[in-house]
Amino acid sequence: GERLRQVCLIVHVLCNLDLARWILECAMIVRFSRWPSPSSVHLVGGASMSLVDGSHGSSRWSPHDLRRSPRAIHRGEPPLLANNPPAPQRRYIRHHVEMTKLCPDAKTALSLSGLKSGDTIAVGGFGLGGTPETLLNELASREDGPTDLTVASLTAGVDDFGLGRLFEAGKVKRMISSYVGENKNFEHMFFTGQLEVELVPQGTIAARLRAAGNGMPAIFTPAGAGTLYSEGGIPLKYNSDGSVAIASPPRQTQMFDGKEYVMEPALRPEVSLVKAFKADTRGNLVFRGTSQNANPDCAVAGKVVLAEAEIIVEAGEIDPDEVHLSGVYVDHLIQARDNEKRIERLRETNAGKVTDISGGRGRIVRRAAKEFKDGMYVNLGIGIPTLASSFIPEGIHIELQAENGLMGLGPYPDPTLNQHGDPDYINAGKETVTAIRGASSFSSSESFSMIRGGHIDLTILGGMQCSASGDLASFFIPGKLLKGMGGAMDLVSSPSTVIVTMEHVAKNGSPKIVKQCSLPLTGRGVVDRIITDMCVFDCDKRALRNGGLTLTEIASGLTIDDVRAATDCPFDVASGGVKLMDDD
Image 1: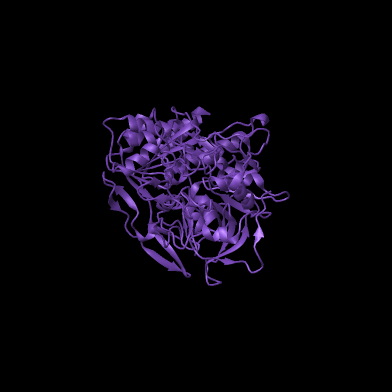
Image 2: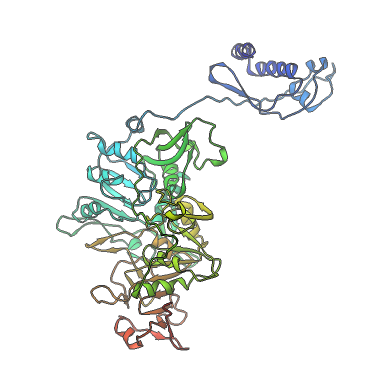
């Protein structure tokens, strides 16, 4: 008992560890008449010795065993003879010291981080999901705190919440993000020259963070190749008069197997702020649903990592197999005291009732749903593409992926089935969703690995313009509209089939299908098919038939001449004739 542990500790200190361990093992053999199980035997002072060089055995003790080592007893070796001295054996001992990374509050954690003005920070979260509210609120409220920060995060959040509070407090000099979303104040600050914005594809941000955590200086990705993103010239900062003050420089590219790739440097922030659902005192983290997003990627990249968790338990209370992120990446941990978990877009259904979609948009949605084939893995963009999932044909089973970290996307929650909006389960449009049976959640970097690796069969997304050669513009109107590319650049550059859904003409009546896009491109030569409210075009993006568009289907009541009048580029007509788009 306690006296034996004290004796062993004294022997350990005054003599040597091997002798102390031998005494302890022999005493346990005498007491229990068996080899002790390989578990940690704690000494006083908070340390412990692990018996790591043995396993369970059942050898009985005898007086002859005093001349044998405990390991020999366990192995059942014969008693030692006078002329058969034991061979020296190395003992492997592990010492464990109880430790905690728990800090009393966010103020303490930020002080310990060493964050200073001009640093780069990475912030977990997608939309409002998985946002480290407590840490962001503390950082925003510190009047004497660091300023001129560069912030890297997948999205820019909303006004007066999370990241939005940092912008309003004037703490941020530059934002590295893929999507601005609904943050009107952020957009205003950018166009008036108060904020620098570096738009980066969503998958690229996650991969750059992960590369930093892996000790890799850079990555190569097809996302953005052949566009203004890689060629340089996207505004990073405007002057107060609306002119461009700083434009993005060209990015280095390289050809691999006949395809162009963009070289992206690893993103290594001085401090990362992340949010977990559960943590233990050693910093092991567990995430929930789509609130995982880029939180693990931010954590592995940061030089110093501050984590907040909704639930904190003692070390050992989380099964090792349930840990999503090892505590080795976390430096300081706090309780998430600001835990509003606001829902950006609450969407619910009523007894499975499908929203009635009529007119041109309804025609697009119903026709897009016919692209689903049984067994497909599909990614649907926000807006019209998402609505197509409500019209999956009978007998067709597909699995929907949300790039923010969910495979097995289900319908909107149904209150009649006791389902309610959950802030930890949202789609790429930040709408509340459910997960089907057999669904899985994962990090942003893994999500885009599925996309880039060709594991997603079909991508359907919206667009602002499409060209005759399959170019797509969908994310930015210089000087007027800042949305960001989100995950679109990653999706359209992947091996999946790419279908664009959009109205045939803009609100002012100008054609959206053109000979050459006038807006910054999301991807060059990436579109396989265009579905509009007037017709369906197939794109010969690989120039197998001399390039260009082919009209394959037309809406009821329209003629080919009607389509030509609304299209700003020449096109061919299918040799077998043009079919009617089915409205039903």
